Image 1 (tube, rainbow, N blue to C red):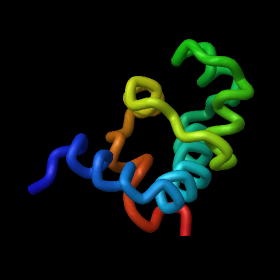
Image 2: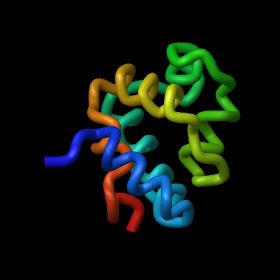
Image 3: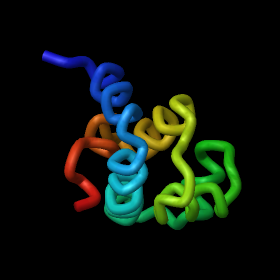
Length: 87
């Protein structure tokens, strides 16, 4: 069984897949949590524009930001960034 970190590192190697997955999963879980982009941004200590860019796949979060987003949303990092999530 792979740890969440192993899964994240493996996906990191495929930048195109990794960025595409960010788009749908972060937005989906944020909306399920009833949070606005601004509220999520405040809780993880970044700007709203950073959250917008992550959700749109325009930027990929650093590992600490990915962990913070997952913690706030109450999901595992592997749920946010698993293979095929953005397809």
